[in-house]
Length: 105
Image (cartoon, rainbow, N blue to C red; front, side, top):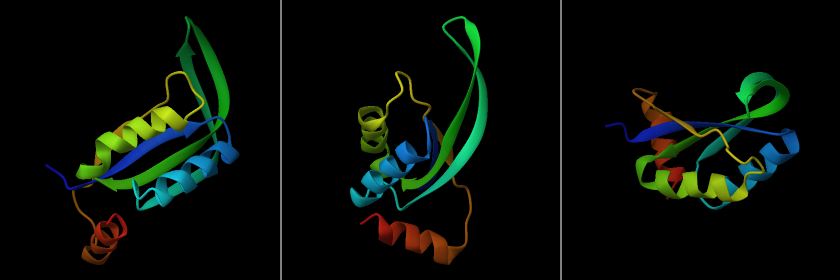
C-alpha cells in the first residue's frame, strides 16, 4: 500500500479552487495543491451531455489524512457530486517525499 497519494478534483472556477487549496493546506490535510485554472470538461449529467470550463486541483497527501480530506472536500465543495479521485504515488524523489511527510505533520 502506498503511503502518499495524489487526489484530484475539479471546481467551478479558479476562485473556488484557490479557496479550497488554502483551506486544505492550512488544515494540513494536504501538503500542496496545484490549481490548473482552465480545463474543459465534457460529461454526462442528469441524462444529457454537459460542457463546462472548470479548474483542476492536484493535491498531495498521505494515507492517514485521506478520510478527513475526502470529507472536507465534500463539505467545502459547491458541486452536488464533487469529483474525488485518489491515485497512489508509487515512487518519487526521496527529498520530495520527505518534504511531503514533514509538511503533513
